[in-house]
Length: 187
Image (cartoon, rainbow, N blue to C red; front, side, top):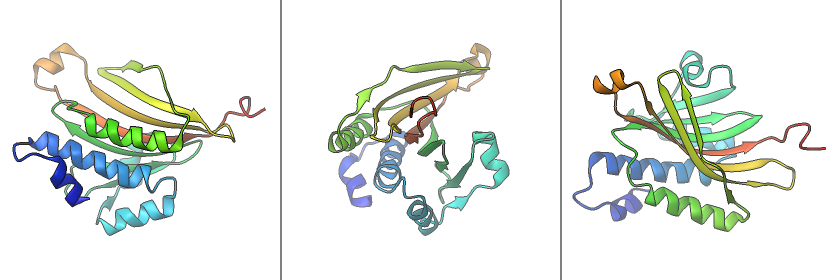
């Protein structure tokens, strides 16, 4: 992964651009190449000396959804496994802005072309209190009616007073999800 990263980045790349590239390649390795093999994913996180999040820390992000999470050793991001009915792998981090998602788009397109059958989904936008959430992605329906999706989520503070006070960053996450069919959909 480090050789690939060095080839992708110019000597003048910003810290945010370097982080975006690192997180994209981590997503590729963990969520596209390893997931849904949870045991191998867990072993990879252990091998990277990532700190497993406590149940209380997981609850902050996932509320009551069953999940596990790890904080990278350098504390730049977290990696998550969410368990069914929404079996998902995600890489999450904060950034000053969204940045150029070209590398992500290339990696996601390569995965989707190899797997076949992916179609764009309508963008998702929602406001939850002072946070605006936006997502774009693609999905396909597998033979067992499971929906496989790749998403990019970004969220930011939308309250003008909080933004004026300096809360202008973005929380980003790349997600690979396998959603179990609902009972009605599987009939």
